[in-house]
Image (tube, rainbow, N blue to C red; front, top):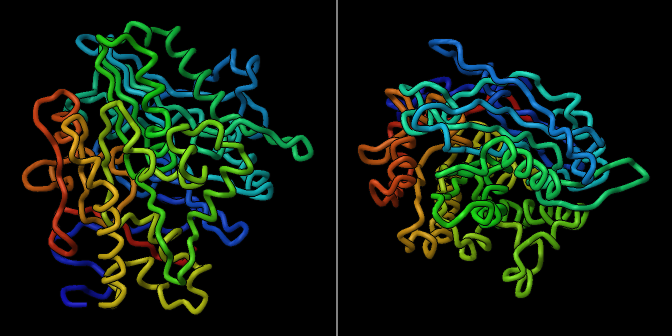
Length: 422
């Protein structure tokens, strides 16, 4: 393609190379589906910090077991909390960790031996960067808030409520959510005068699922809003004509009995699996919500639009790993994907209370990374970056409905490309 050198770099675009298990992705090939578990602490090996980030310790929720609120393997759930101060002492930001899903007994048995299924395997210290940073120069609007990272160990976006006794699997995402909120309320969140529920990837979906529940925790005088980063998973047809992600979500919903936790306003007219897709949830969400998503979401290209299972001959192999190697016909498929995303948010964007930032980048999760959240060369739409856009929307400084022009017009992207096949 014009303008690309041997490594696929394009002028004006910053690329992040990702390789193996030690970078941005943790890929588990099970049952033919790529479980790409995306969290910022796994990504940190691929990003160099100018100064060491704040490291925050893990706190287990001691009372969670009494209500059955446990991880897949039965261990206690946990979170990382860094206390706010000054003007942010009574402000709370709750960030829900992402990390894929498990949709079969086999994938859940595998998962319970990882940090996304057991607190035994969780990192005891993680870096707080991006929206969780404690530095005003890195996180101008939320740096002095009480900032919480709720760890993800259930495999259903904090929404299941079931178990499998034969394999000793506990699907207790909804109970974990409730136990965490109860514990945090007892630690001072009850006094919040403003609160923001956010999340990345599977955590971004969870932020949508629990947005209105979060609102109900507080009096009406408390400013409460929600932010979904890379959580706008689309119900799209893959390159083989199938529906890879719908099949995956269907397994999650059935196995973990998610249906009973989904909004009745949705399940009364649609199959519960369809109600796990954000495009069918956002019209029902009453609380102000901000959607941040890359129009060419790298996770969705890899795992939903052009997964290996839909491309047995490898026609999409190079393109799915590096957009610079996409043919004109493949680029058109990606442009059609972008159009479906814009169609999915067309009604949502009409509400003044909601916010939107859809940039034409090949990326996934942009709030947790310092370079994409707030830095001198962060991605922008017009003259405004992600952190400023979220802050302007949250504090009602400006209405934010930012939709980028189609690829390849945006030269501020921090695009992800991958060195090897997963």
